[in-house]
Image 1 (cartoon, rainbow, N blue to C red):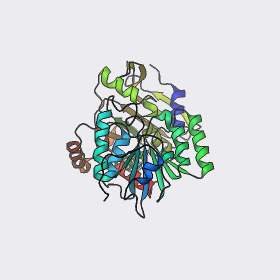
Image 2: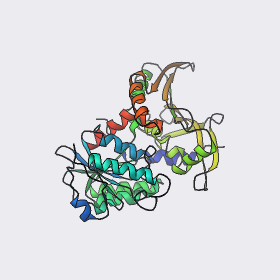
Image 3: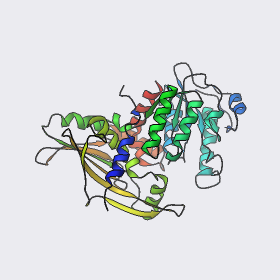
Length: 374
């Protein structure tokens, strides 16, 4: 097993095409699946109010598993007061995938959400929406391969701002094309790198500044079962690979705070004893090759050095450490910390079958969406 430097550089480049997010009651109705602009326009919604962004979620995913679904939950529950989730566009579960795995659960959740919050669900395209009454923000959380097309459609649909889930596009060339298209249209596009606003990252960076010549290691964990079935499903659902999926949040930290760029990398050293790569079949039967664990140290031409470790089966908590010049660990900070664990326990009880990492990063997802909506 080798860590491909070219693959790493490609993943690192995707973190800098768009900027990370800057560090700065409705009427009830039955399930509303609008199929064209007339139906959407006729929907009797309270919608976004003055001072709110009209949010369109493009690509929701399955309840309890899709990141788009959890974004929706936070907005529907009013935890992002500057964002009004008025539309959800989900062509798969409201179309060909409606009777397959996850389809009935999605439609049940959609019906409940429509009845409780008045949200309109569409099975077609964002371009079918009526003109916005408040500034429109698109939150794209679909398949990475679809993102270039979806961004074009969001621009045509009068979106003023687009929140793009990582990694943005399958290739750097496609991401650069999207960047050029957005700039030409005068549309702001922001990447949802929530760890840039995480407490454990800030605390670790602050402590590291007090230790001369210290070394920081970021450890990212997920709680997948260490079985071929669980990892195979993970590999297929996140087919862009670990470096462009799970570990890309850490690459964004390196680009934001440690001067890491394609041009500035002097070396990438893989920890081969820690790292592990497997080829496993996904639910479709197609085989996918990816890392289930990876660890590497980056050294820049400007003399900075930082380590990243990621483990699909490492548990629910992520953390960062600081070591001194002798290699002794002098600081460790977890996400969630003791202060946030009560919130995690409450959310676990409310959504017992959801992905655990939703809850450990819950306040950071809220912060990111609020900053985008404002």
